[in-house]
Amino acid sequence: MLLGALALAWVATEIVSARPAIATLLVARVLQGVSVGLAVGTSTAYLSELTGNRARASLWVAITSSVGFGGGALLTSTLLKLVPSWPTLSYSIYLAFAAAVWLLLALCGARLPAVGGRLMRLPSYEVSSLLPHLSIALGWTVSGLVIGLVPSQLREHGLERMVGPALFAVNVAGVLVQPLARRLGSDRSLLTGAAIIPLGLGALIYGSIEGSVPLLLAGSAFAGSASYGFSYLGGLAAVTRQATRDNEARLVAGYMIFAYLGFGVPTLLLGYLSERIGLRVSLLTIVALATLAAGAIGVILLKRVRLSYASPLLQESKARVRPSS
Image (cartoon, rainbow, N blue to C red):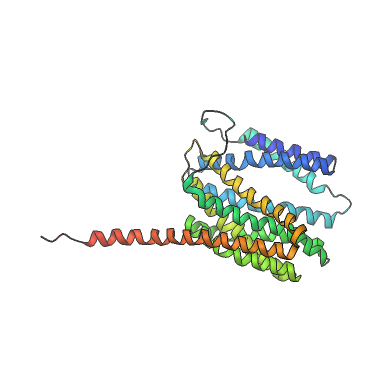
């Protein structure tokens, strides 16, 4: 499955590199989407099998995917500045790297016992994991808005060359807090993300409306700590903790569907609303809705965190009670 995912990603990059155009870009994006869908769930289950530790596997997947999201933008931006005559150089580097990884995995990858059943399975969901799913959808809503707003605002201020580093910084902010998110545990990590998202999103939108690049970047990095840090890792750890060997890949795939719905749908909604009621009102509407959603998720998580603290105390108090003779 991982070999197939890498092959699809390679083909997608080769298509858009060989013939850059809107049509080929759309085809490449579809292939890349299928590749990501195959890779994320499978790689999480694969690492869990290899390490025997689902929490550690979730951490590695969260770190590598977060760096990968921003690393491509940073690499492309840097190479365009250094070698402007070769705009597809980053694609060539990626193609060589992906081919090397494919060969390494094919020749040296650990062979694990088959789970059994059909090779292709639909994503799966657990009702008890609804909060992690909603949390990552909300977190990646901010990520989608960052990608939509930051490049255009930097270009307006003549800072085109800072687009790649700025987007990479958003992901790095998430990576830096992931060790802390792991120590906090799933619920407290998700609660922290729910508290951070409205603050970061508010700074991002206010900076965009007022044309303040420092505030825009600060809000983006602050929100990135939730999108790719607390909310992402906390939710992924919660989902994999409930998984079995048979359904782990399916549960992670279902989790990532919510993530990408949050990534794409609000951005499309913003574009639709901005043409009808204006960008400023649309942005403020998105902030209000996201704040309400974060508040609702936060209240539920806060109750769960309090119960998790209270439960050991109640058990301890009961243990101290001795029946009177």
